Amino acid sequence: MENVIDILEQRGFIDALTSEEIRTFVKTPQALYVGFDPTGDSLHLGHLIPILSLAWFAKCGHRPIALVGGATAMIGDPSGKSQERNLLDQEQIEKNKIGIKENLKSILQQDIPLVDNFDWFKKMHFIDFLRDIGKYFRIGQMLSKDSVKLRMQSEEGMSFTEFSYQVLQGYDFLHLFQSEGVCLQMGGSDQWGNIVAGIELIRKVHGKPSFGITFPLLTRSDGKKFGKTEEGTVWLSAHKTSPYQFYQYLFNTLDNDVLTLMKRLTFMPLSEIQLWEESMKSSDYKQHSAQKALAEAVTLLVHGKEGLQSALFLTEQLVPGGRTSLDKATLQALVQEGVYTNVENLVGMKIVDLLVQAGLQSSKSDARRLIQNGGISLNNEKMTDESAVVTESDLKEGEFLLLSIGKKQKRLIRKK
Image (cartoon, rainbow, N blue to C red; front, side, top):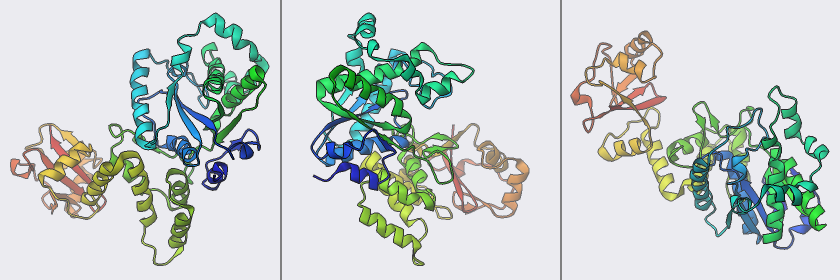
């Protein structure tokens, strides 16, 4: 059996190991888990690191488990946060759990068990928990955790609710150790203190070793957080980030990041990634070819064959400088992907005003100047009349028109 730690290290998954003994430990099949708190109704692009780590363990013959934190989401993890989260109600958490379970099932495509820590915490009485579990935790050690120290130094401080989070996550590890034989927990680098708390609890209760692995946070070479745009987060759920938008984000990856992301976000063999690295240094390399391969692989993984086909179709239709087909099928696809802007009182509106209202130009004078310079096309036809207005005949299917700004930007306008 191939050593999964070697694979993860080669692909840049590992930030730290709680013990070098893990390398020997995983030479035989083991049970392990990663936790996902349902603080939103979808996971985001950065979560592909822990998701794919579960998949790699499964490929290497281990027994991974995904934990959805229905109970811990009620508390809120203080790790990496400068202030306390807004507490979620049970109804919202239930909705979020459904979305996250759908993400995990659709991406993993394997029979990986999903457990919810609310199932064991809901049966537990507060006094029993303090007496049977709380006694194993020492305040000094809890205060020494980075997530606690940072918050204690802040103006807001830290509530007892948040302070107790590491106790709950530590108990998750103990519960899965006892019920499923889990001896390994994985998580982001900000989870180190929580993971160590679980390892210590298992040692104190059972006198047996357990282990932890943390992943590096996914950042770009320009210092920005990967998976974040000016518009917001790149989500894994199609209803929050469409397959087209998802594909485009990856397609626009910087050259310095594309190989790293191939290693971490895909199952491409390292030999294939090496060929891409050599290709990018070649004078024959076609710009963005590696980004295209990355975007296709990750979009297929997250959104399936149908989602990838939709993303590729719309990418072709909206390619800068190209002619976009304005038939019914294309227009419906653009609407389904959310690539449009609703505008009221569209018929009779001056194109100059429309460019400003749709956010394509900052002022009417800029819009007029662009039209005068031949930089605007309406339904693939270049405009020259700065006083032109939208007519009924301009509307495709009675409600759409396409504005193109130079060779860089296109926007579908829909009559509201």
